[in-house]
Length: 314
Ligand SMILES: NC(=O)c1ccc[n+]([C@@H]2O[C@H](COP(=O)([O-])OP(=O)(O)OC[C@H]3O[C@@H](n4cnc5c(N)ncnc54)[C@H](OP(=O)(O)O)[C@@H]3O)[C@@H](O)[C@H]2O)c1
Image (cartoon, rainbow, N blue to C red; front, side):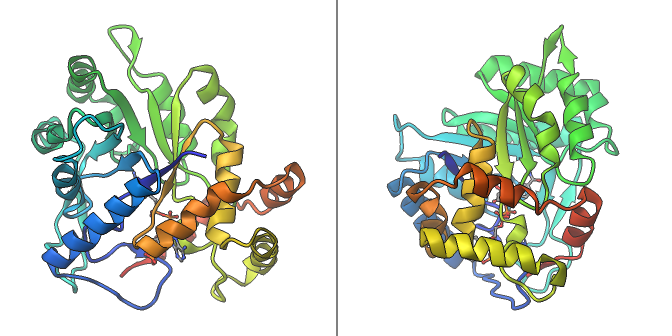
């Protein structure tokens, strides 16, 4: 199973999750040292796909530095453009990132992201939405087409929100010079949010690459008394976790990898211990019956995304 490492929780003090306590590390040197350790461990454990973004604090620069002595190694990197980190590592910050899908932002962020070459294979619009009009912005689409050909990149979008399927379908229709522009889709899928199943066939048929993010529903798959309606779900996942002697995180990641066998599944681990636990995904295989049982726990996308909006950054 193909587990990649997502760097959203590495490289800045705060990130969206279900925790109520703050473990904010605002010391940049500490963030760097810890981030390097997670990257080293990931490589050691066989992870070869790394996902980052300029919006993730110092994560993208950390990856650029980490790659400096990795020449010739088989490492694949994906980054994004469209969000700027603005919290300045302030532990009390309220605004963390700003979205801007303009041609000038694309050109500005590419000036840093291109340092990820030659490892960079995938360049994505960070959280493409209908509202920003980015999928109709000709200057942006033409520039992405240029970068795709010039640097042999896969061009992608990431999607977040209730209408992610609608955004994916719209992106599938985008062409430049009569060629489809987008090759990859980084989208949310987990036992609670299964709307991606409706585009599984078309993505496969059109040979698009799927990268699954938020496979742990930002931590909501762990037993939590704030979600009384998920108690049966929690019991079921915990039973499987006992059966296979792994954490519920590995059960959930294994579920995603079984439903989308060709996809890269992102681990959002923020520590080495979480990464090691996540990687137990490869130590067992859920049966067909267990997959069908788990599929029952999906909720309406509107409910799922409403809950996510209420999660705090800490
Ligand atoms: N393109 C986009 O718009 C977008 C949006 C979201 C994510 N992503 C990408 O997808 C990646 C993964 O998504 P995500 O991190 O948002 O969500 P996620 O994978 O659903 O959740 C990750 C969180 O789960 C917790 N966790 C993981 N393993 C654990 C374990 N063994 N025990 C206890 N807790 C554990 C950690 O929480 P704590 O930190 O609280 O311990 C971690 O931050 C990101 O890193 C990023 O690369 C992209």
